[in-house]
Length: 474
Ligand code: AMP
Ligand code: ZN
Image 1 (cartoon, rainbow, N blue to C red):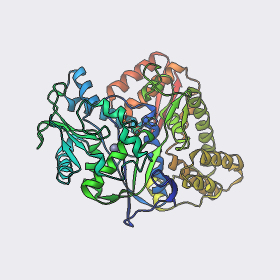
Image 2 (image 1 turned 90 degrees about the vertical axis):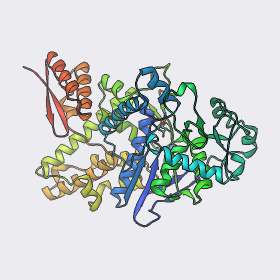
Image 3 (image 1 turned 180 degrees about the horizontal axis):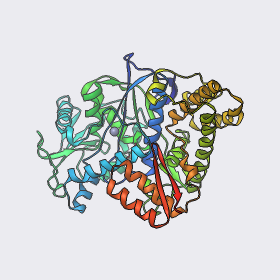
Image 4 (image 1 turned 60 degrees about the vertical axis):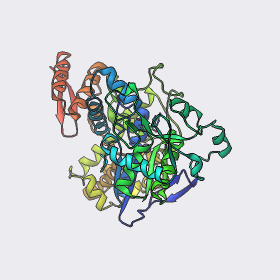
């Protein structure tokens, strides 16, 4: 059983579905106004590893993750691009999905969008107005009254006095241009502004749009009701986003809201924060242009313990490439020894856990607060100890199943292309990676153009089911 740290109680807790059937969890999703960066993907990849460990441990899940497709940033940038908000966010949603696929993240079962849930959000604001937890200001915006919810600040352990002085909430409050009767009150419904252009909806309080904290609460209520198993996001969301979600959800609907809070510590680049000005807000495409595969990116992101900051460097991607090649070599030896017998699929592994043998400690580490670096350490200890050539074909097959079971939990498939393509120059490798991503996104025109460019440089791409090889043209 998976034991995981819970932000609210500050303790490690066992995870089991409260309804005895399916483990229902919600992750705050991307704001679709540009490509997601590797910081975002640290969070999404670790949420994916979390889900895989639960599922491979025999627990069925319902995974919900929203799309924030209306907020200040999406509206501002769609206008800059001269397209409608819908066109703009649909394009970036497609890109997000393609990147998730390249990173081998399982798609959520439910992926609701804020724009498609405006009536639900208006209803929620109405409930808060009716029960005295919200008030309208002169300009038609509606605010949540923090003082009406005495437990406000519990998740993030905020000092109430600090809140009342407005120190903690000040930054967010000032970023908003609306009048409020208490600095820490947050906006539920924003009245229409000139800059919003055509992006507004009718409501009992006039034309406007939802505030950015509201969507998750309204959609969670629709799909999960008042209580569900777990809520997750990057650590930056603890305050104010998750604090606000708890307050408004409990006041509107009652119940406990999320039973468990899973927060992922931030990714740093070269020991510091990512920023546009430093040019280190890497996207998958940036890294592909440098010749780094999505598998290597996933390996680095999945391999850091979620409760510690992950220091991302380009060197760590090179190390990942070497590690993946080692795993692929070991796999090949096991495959040869077992007569290349087909392996169970992810879904079959969910039904029957193989006997884990030397890989049991890795599985234990994953279940012990998702300690991914410790688990990887155990994997490498195991592959050092095991000599595939000394095993008979049945033993080799069983060992390979155990090895792949752990790899499935990490969501990595060490394919031989890491090795086969080793000799290609970096610019050719980079083009090949871009083509691979274009293929994943089903962008065949770009994929074909890239194939030609690769050929002009004297290399041929040979596709395989799960990857490709780069071969020198003779
Ligand atoms: P956003 O698209 O900004 O709403 O963020 C999507 C997810 O990425 C949220 O769960 C954020 O908390 C998370 N996130 C943002 N920056 C980072 C970072 N540097 N490291 C890890 N997670 C992050
Ligand atoms: Zn949220």
